[in-house]
Amino acid sequence: MTIRPILIHPDPRLKKVADPVTEITDDLRRAADDMLETMYDAPGVGLAGPQIGLMKRILVMDCSKDPEGSRNPMVLMNPEITWASDELNTYEEGCLSIPEQYAEVTRPAQVEVRWLGLDGQLHEQRFDGLWATCVQHEIDHLNGKLFIDYLSPLKRQLITRRMIKLKREMARA
Image (cartoon, rainbow, N blue to C red; front, side, top):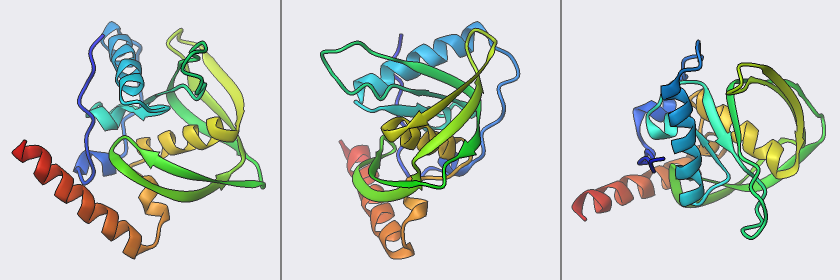
């Protein structure tokens, strides 16, 4: 497994809609393993294909936050939300592509998601709590949307300027 570089906002690939996964190949399985390794190393709870420059509808997540406990890695391809609760939750979200920046985002408290698994089968599951927030955040990535797109234009501009400065500093290092 390889830890892949994570794209930092602003990057045009983060604003593009990812292409559907049409077949499960060994390359795609390796990419999923790399994504999980990259996510755990970051550390994060979710990562979408576009964040590593893979423009496919694939995401990985693991919201079992106990570092000493067992992991619960999930790989979702072509995920779609089939139901969302009327009840809302507000979480302070962050993003591996927008390091060290956090903001409260309100989303449905529960969602049902259907996706293609690495086993080639369709799966469906209801998520709540952090899992629901995470899967919605990562599906947004597949649709070219970032969590800062939920913020006011002023806050979004401020965070974008910080990321431009960070990218300049990283390029110099």
